[in-house]
Amino acid sequence: MTKRFFLETVGCQMNVLDSELVAAALLRAGYRRTFERRHADVILFNTCSVRQHAEDKIYSALGRLKHIKEQRPDKLIGVLGCMAQKDREAILRRAPHVDLIVGPGQIGHLVALIEERERTSEPQIAVALPRRGHRRDTVAQSFALYDPDRLTAARAQRHRAMVRIMLGCDKFCTYCIVPSVRGPEQSRPAAEITAEVRALADQGCREITLLGQTVNSYRTAENGRQVRLSDLLERVAEAEGIRRIRFVTNYPRDMTPDLLQAVRDLPKVCPYLHVPAQSGSNAVLKRMKRGYTVEQYREMLAAVRETLPAAAVTSDFIVGFCGETEEDFEATLRLTEDARFKNSFIFKYSPRPGTKAHELFPDDVPEAVKRRRNHELLGLQNRISEEDNRRFIGETVEVLIDGPSKAAGRTTFAEGDAEPSAVSAANGEKLQLTGRTPCDRIVVFHGEAKWIGRFARVQVERVTAVTLFGTAVSVES
Image 1: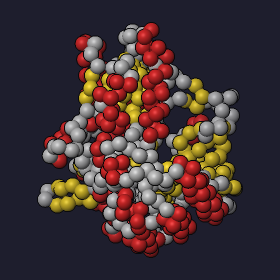
Image 2 (image 1 turned 90 degrees about the vertical axis):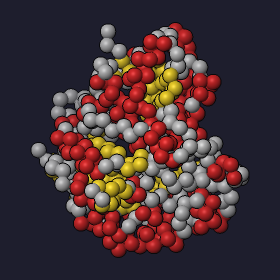
Image 3 (image 1 turned 120 degrees about the vertical axis):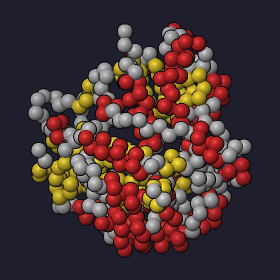
């Protein structure tokens, strides 16, 4: 009887891509996918360690599975990803019924680890070396690059795909656990990346997103010459069938003139830049060890606006970081007001054991103050976003259609499907669809399920801070 797997993903786009590769490996090994835990023979959680809430969610889910494991000892439970790399054996102490603990650098061995668990009945732990106490190159080798041939059936959206161009991070921001759980910065060979993009295009992919923890830090050597992200974009843009190219996440100091010019000059590259600021205060940025000042960040923004006047720029902010005063927070509000980001991802500071901030600084901003600052900054950003979105009313925008919106009605879950397949209540009945513009604005409109994966022209009629609503005026055949 064919075994089935359930896979839940928490965290960033890197985790989403890792989960796609895990699903592909299991499908190739003969497993079928299920979206119900109770139907699965193997239950996997691909985890995040950036914030405490993400870890708490996983431990809560593991706790609920304890009685299921008692009833079905043959059912395997696995913790993958960043939490596995960070907590290692500690996961077994909190949840001794877990069978597999696999770090992000070892996901390529998952099928073999499942087989070994079934053969020996012993928990399997596969993680990379810690960064402290080992040479950088030795640690890098233990974080194995895993980028196999892509499998369309494993991808949530067949018309979009993410492509890893680098792994790890060497910035060591004091609040961030990523350098520890993702390892040293490693850039993939450019030829390997372009070949993967061409293969995705052959599978019908229309849009790709190049991924890296600091994607614009991409550097590799080829025939004695350096290849930068701007060079890579030129090569990727030559892939037939690819209509849009994005890249995330960017580091402010590496937003170089050549990269901005590539975005300007290559029609396929979307005018969308995610460049986290994290704070508007120099004192906070110094404690965060971000490596730039507010003045330098503003200079970078000015260069973006000069080269790409219509580009959408988004940011990340952490409120309530160690020692953040009201004056520091006011500086963040001023930066947000002046920058007029398309949107910002705003988080309350969460101490992470294993980071320098956890070792060096007290978490001295009260939770109530963090909540109030989070709410205030979010309110400011939402006002700016809605004001800027109003200029699209009456305009016609190009949208790549992703699928039904969350309010589109019922969905069916088919065994073996890469994702739930949307259905209309009756044949040909219109449903609410969603897609994105080149500048990454979400657009909602009514259409037919057969339009998913196509490009459409949508006339915008009303807006909110996060969404444009309109009517489709044309859809490509």
